[in-house]
Image (cartoon, rainbow, N blue to C red; front, side, top):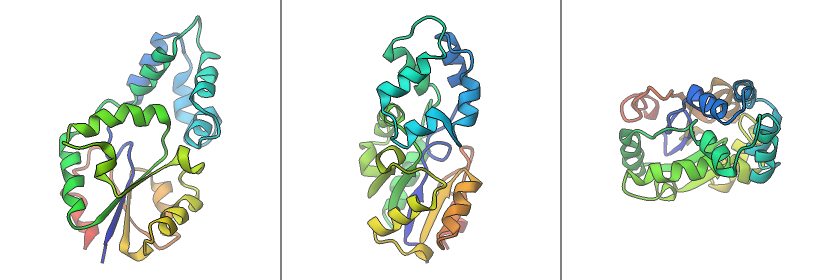
Length: 204
């Protein structure tokens, strides 16, 4: 019986728009950000940022190395934010509904700029981002990122979760496979999925 739900953020709750992000960086003079976006899931300074190995100032410095001309901090942050255009209201409502019957958590590979970008989007649902979840586990704070199995171990231990009673919802099969190794139940949900109806079969 499922008692706990752990949600991913980008691609499950927040809509992702890679091309919009690439276009925004091209506009400020970075013509190679598409390659960086495609590689960041595995390695490079983008992943270092999401693991908290480098801070925001260091991340911006790396970005500036690829920019022809100059770009302000605000321009870089806005280009980053273009990757995360919106959260559909129905997803926020679904999470609040799940909170009535389950312990609900967030586990995300993310960074400070991304979190500040999405916080106002959560407010559309009537409460601050932090109130949607019992606890938010963010990669840059934990110094770990999915699919490293250690990040799942820390979540289970920190919140005293039984793996077999826990459902992990993510848009990456690789991340789901890592969670399964610990006995965690999983559900592949893409941004097109309806969190209210499409998740129901996994909660039985």
